[in-house]
Length: 382
Image (cartoon, rainbow, N blue to C red):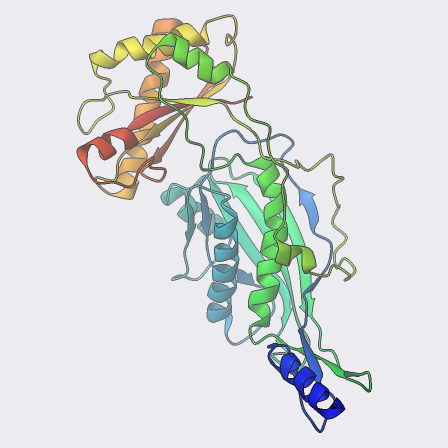
């Protein structure tokens, strides 16, 4: 009877993918080796919050440790990091360029400007060691984020991660063994990328804001003065919470206090406007003057006078990305100039930006869908 019970127990254990049951040897319980990380070191970060979604450009990482496979590793590490951040929804558009060699900050900055990105995300790998399935695997990643407009360094972060080889532990009744990941760099880089995304989420608004359309001054004021919903606290995924963090810091960069780094995403008030322009240019149709006058009345009201706003132009997907990006910027600038000349709103309180076709409200291809995507968005910037 005992043998039958033992056989049944071993069969149940064998049904689990992490247990290797045997009649002649103690059963072995397998665990995936976790990622051990140093503390995330943030030496430079913005003082305030950002109120408009920003686009990002990620070139191949710069491998600072001499090796014979530089180009492949530079592209692979950047690609892993890029996809991890894509899952976090940090930017409305995040472009990875992996068909070229990164020759440094200045050239990457020029390429980011040419691509129309707001931010350059430059990755450095000062150290890595590939142990594969036989030894420890470790990597250190530094991320520097620059404003493409000014060239200013906005963020400087660094973190190290390791998957350590662990020996089998024998408990007589059973054995506990640790399986090395077949893709250790993928696992470590993703863990580091998820950590680095957290402070950025506290700085950036969600890229998925879907503001209502306003047709008169009352609706414009209502949407720009309404209290936003309380922001949800930032959370890490279940897998991320399981990752160990027992490595000592590997740098001496300053670690900001919790009060210094933003902890929740900015909640930004905004409204969409169906502003019509002449075909293929930035001349405002006269039929849209009434709606723009509603914006002028709202922005000169006691509730909104002196408030800073962001005027964002959006196009449909007809035409090239670069052409639409430039056109959307010109149209946003035309709206700003109208509000300055007609309503004497201080130009320094308004920022004109363009997103081109990167943030559609609908992916449909009908005339109504294209019309909905052609819009001007007004956001409060405070």
